[in-house]
Amino acid sequence: MGTYEGSAVVTADGAEFPVAVYLTLTPGPGLREWYGTLIAPGEEATWRMHEADETTIRIGPAASFITTLAQLGGTELGIQGSGTPPFEG
Image (cartoon, rainbow, N blue to C red; front, side, top):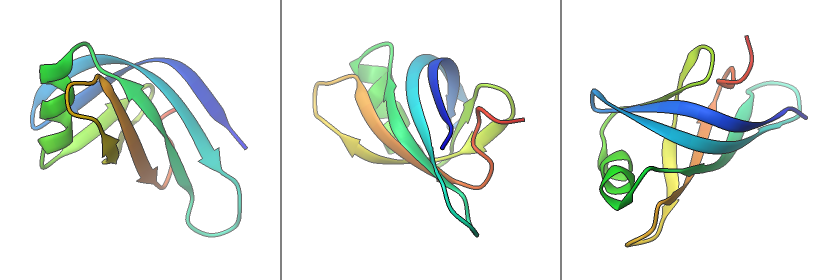
């Protein structure tokens, strides 16, 4: 199982945001899934990422993701993606 903890850049509908991330790759055959938490630079950025139609995260290669959890007034988002994780490659 691979993990990554550190800095990344999220692009949400064309706007870029620096974030801190904690990501984990689920081991297993077939489709690769990864998930984790990101900490946004503020409440407005969190909301913009959560409400965006298109989101990618970039550590190395960019990877698309969806938000799975957000709390009103917070800066933490749960995220999930599939395929090659952004911390590989």
